[in-house]
Length: 472
Image (cartoon, rainbow, N blue to C red; front, side, top):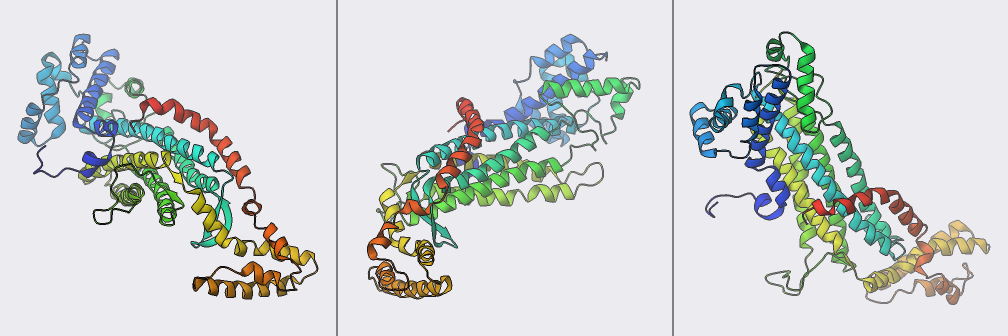
């Protein structure tokens, strides 16, 4: 393609070779031909006047698609499926008369889509597991490394670096559970005829409904599907597309949340995404280390979440047994949803594999706020020594506001000196310094991390097994 023609950034910049190939014309139209072979094979096996030689001839010409012939024919007849039936017949002339026997266009278009979507979801599952595995390694390494916690993006009780990573990982595990449900729930359309009644096949098989069921069972099995939809119109239910794009949107939501957290932490230089030796952060400010991968994750995830709105709008506006206003939308929204989710997860893998913690900056930020964060423990200790909880709370509030006012002027925090000098607390500065150990305030972070990672271990073994199939 020349540089004077628009090209999608999802194709040229972001998506993997696997996903680009999966949604390529070759894969789509070869899948159509495989479906025509499967139909002919099943019809032959169930006694229709189709010879083994015709089936074999069709099977020998799955990949040699003459696109020029198909495009010329489509220009003439304005029908893509019939154009490819024609081109297939030119390649396999003795079988030309039995191609597509009894079928309607949606036999190839819809079943092919279901095959591609199923394979795409399986691939994304491997990518999702790889992100989770990277996060698990990171979480275990920093399981007990204290860091400043935030609520409302204001300093709060300490957590650990590893515990925070498990929050991201838990979101992705939820996505994995939804993804597995969608994959396991997928059904094949089968060959159902123009309005889903199977009337054409009932006629071909002389009224034998069992043979119609067996034909559909054989075709579905050939493509790895255990079940067909029990009922359908001409198409498979477009609610299936909603389920698929919803789970892709869910992955985008989790990725956005993680990447946005990383952007916030990189602003404070506590945690940084990978930055290569020769990478340029800014054309004007050479000192900068912009979190460009995390920003890209957020940008693409927004597109992915918005794209998911296409499927419910299409599903809700289908007319009776079939309408064609779904087609143009689905040609764009479904492949681009997969390409975008693929791009997001590839970036997530890159970020999580090289995530860097600036531990001294983490410690410094925690030390600055720890006197404030320890005040609840100090108050409890003072109560044990005979103090009044409500009075102590008010004193801490006043001392904290005064210490904060000093800090806003650039002066050092003197909260501990103020508390040590207040007889209501009955504690020396040395006693107060003794409770300035960050690990006293992280609760069960380490245990929570270890328990969560142990729960995920069986899934992470799947990620290791999938490595050879994942394009990073």
